Image (tube, rainbow, N blue to C red; front, top):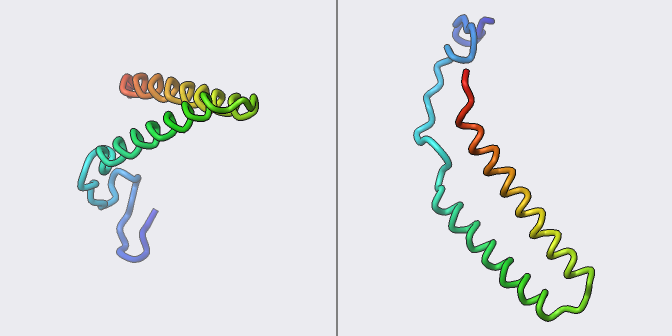
Length: 89
């Protein structure tokens, strides 16, 4: 493949002159973790309040279902994350 602007022959993506990212990993990982923690803390407080005060079965089921989905997603994430580092090329 030939780049028409500079007449450079590019064989594959490894030979393209692109600067590497300035940082490795997730940008602002502490901010992401802190916001996630506060969101979970707030949802826990609201869930506890509603579960203790509400007699509505639909609302109770929705909250329990949300926590179930969250736990399943978190388990799948950690399973995938722990398996991902073991990939061999």
